[in-house]
Length: 186
Image (cartoon, rainbow, N blue to C red; front, side, top):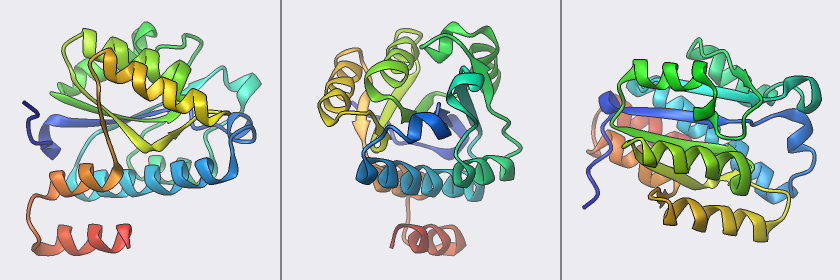
């Protein structure tokens, strides 16, 4: 049974949404990743959901994409540089996640079949309810994105989409949070 996503027990993890990696992504997939990651980040800001971001080998792959970086700055979430493909193999990332005490971790980023998959697999193995956001992950090839999503699901993650996450977080069609988040998804 899938439990409701609650803002106070969730964490949003943005994996390696970096400039040089983005340059290799199919345009439509990259546009969806950026748009939907920004929606999730803004909804997380409105609702108080903690955020962690990673950067894989910054010297080679560049910094986080500017539009996502701006949203991360609003959370005071400085990306943690890593060399491991699984974010949880980096002690600083694993400790930051553990310190937030999430029940559920929502994962976005690049590439679906490498860092996103390995991170989702390790989150699920450590007992976190793990959600990989289909419309906020990308790979250089669509077949790899699909394979990565399937692998993450078989490893125990739940596949979802941006609107499912944000509307689960807000729960009801009323109030200021609903109005602000509804505008984001239009």
